Structures are given as C-alpha cells and as structure tokens.
Amino acid sequence: MKLDKKHQHQLKLCISTRCNFCRRACPIYEVSGMEFDSPRAWLEVINEAIEGRVDSLEIMSLLNKCTLCRKCVGACPHGIETPEIILDFKSRIRGEYIPEPIEILDKKGEIEVDREYRIKVAYPWIYVKNFILNANPLGEKPKKEGLIADADFVFFPGCITNYKDKEVYEACVKFFKKVGAKYSVINACCYSELKPLGFSVDEIRRLFEKRHPHLRGMKIVTPCAGCYHTLKEDHKLNVMHISELIYQHKNKIKRGIEGEVTLHDPCKLGRYHGKFQQSREIIQQTGAKLVELRQNKKESHCCGGGGSLKYYYPQMQENVCENLIKLNEKKATIVTNCSYCKQTINKNTKQKAKHLIELI
Image (cartoon, rainbow, N blue to C red; front, top):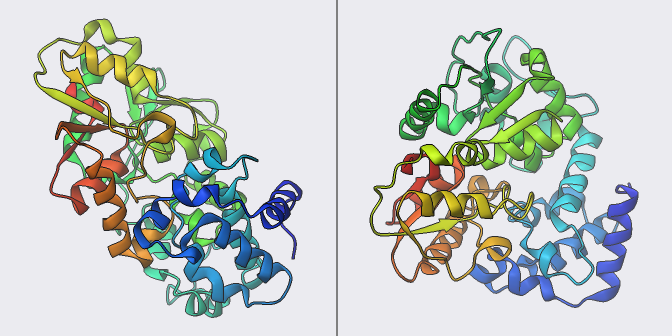
C-alpha cells in the first residue's frame, strides 16, 4: 500500500529529518507530553505500517488523536502536511476492508462488509448510520426543504447550527432580513465528519451529491468553518462564509457592543484558508474593544473539535479546549467564526463563546 505521491514523499522526508519542530505546535502533545502523541510520531507509525512492520488497524488509536488543525504544518520547516497524510492513510486502509462506498443499508440497517473494519477500529457505526439515513450525525430526521428559484443564495447552516444552536440560526436569519437577502435553506450536513473515520473525498462527495444534486453552480452561505472548507475544497461548490457576507454589509452594523471581545480563529477558516482580518474589522465595527488571544491568526489554538478526537478521547478534547481558554488572559467575551468551535468551547469549559453573527 502506498500513499498519494506527494504524501509519500513528505512522509519519507519527515522520517529522515526527525526535527520534531511539530511537537511544540501540536495541541495533543501539549496535553499529554508523550512522544507518541505528536505529528512526527504519527507519521513514524504510518511509515511502519506501510513497510509492513506493524498492523495498520492497530495504529488507528494513535491517529484518531489528531484534530487536523494543521498547526504542525506551519511549524514544519518543510511544510509537511501531516493531517492530509493521516486522512490519506485512513481512507486507503478502510478501502482495503470496504472496497465500495457505503450507500445502501440492508433490511436490518447493517452493512456486512463493514463489520470487520468497524469492530477492529471501534468504528462509531450508529454515528455513520445516522449520516446515511438522515444526512446528519445527530439522528435528527431531515427537514423538508425547497429551493427558491430567484434566491440570492442558499443558506447552509450545517448540522450543529441547524439542530443544536438556535441562537446562531436565528441570528443568521435576522441578519439576512436586515440586508434584504432572499435565500433558500438546505438542512443537511456537509459530511466532513466522515473523513476522519476513513471515508475518502470521493465517498463523501457521492453521498452528498446523491442527496443534493441541485447545488452545483449555486451560491452558498454557511456560518460553519468546517462546512465552508468541505463545501469549497471537497465538493467544489461556490461557497461563502457568513463573515464574508457580513463584511460586505458592514456599513449596516450598528455600534452598541460594549466591553472587550477576543476572537478565536477556527482552524478550517484561518490556517486552512487564511481568513483573519475581516472578522476583526467586523468586531471593531460593533463598538467592542478587540483584544487578541495570546495565540491568534496562524498561531491560533485549536478548540479540539476537529478530527475524531471527540469520539475516542473526550477527556483529551476537554483538556485541549481548556488550554485554549487559558490564552484568554483578559477574560474577554470569546467570539468564534464556527458553529462547531462554539459548541466545543461551551461544552468543555466554563467560559461561554458566541458566534460572530450573534454580535450583529
């Protein structure tokens, strides 16, 4: 088994270099302090599995700790893309056990070909099954939806905003009304959460397009950084993060927010796509005083919500999130540009975060 040519080259480069600069950037290593909880160690065991010296499935427990935050990529002098290498490896290993994408359930709601793989890697089958049946991981029945022919855009709230965060959903709707936008709504998940479980980009794209074949060519707006990245990079759709839409209408923002506000830059919006400045200008436009976290922009600390960490190591996720909160030295109101980050922070810490849209 070999990885993508680029990833294979980067893997060998890391193994031969052994500089360990990635350790000081990794939020998982920061929590555990153990060598095997570092990006270089994860690439080491992937190489051992490819060379046939260890069982590929046996190392999944280590790889499941990676939050895919990409902070290690910035710390690496060679720019080695550890998260992408991990996802590539996971999808190829899963592909050896499940040669066809999961699309059809049998009468019992099971897929026999999937059994050996999910038993060996403690595969969260109910979670995956919810994706296939309901187009979201939460077990919620999908809502009926209809597209408006002359809509300005399609509002894609994402599963967290749609089913778990009424405040963000309502704030988005209120903003659309304020700027006179006409929009349709798609109540579904982007399927990004299946990638850390070994699903390939082709698989999640096939599952998504089977449910939403009509989105190609349409303009989409989402408040979730994870959805933004997946819709843009994996599904190749025309998508805008809601912070960009707010920025276009920033002259309509009323000043009235008092006190100090600090911005948490979501990994999938910041490090992945370099979107930092507009959100800061929006916060200042509200009248709030912007104070930066000790680690911000490209150095922003991960909230712990990415990857599959939350399913396998919830205590470690909580510790990662607590380390993020420690950077808020002035105890300012935490604002983030991602529904998932907001939920992760609010679930794992005593400080309560807000989404940027809730300031508007």
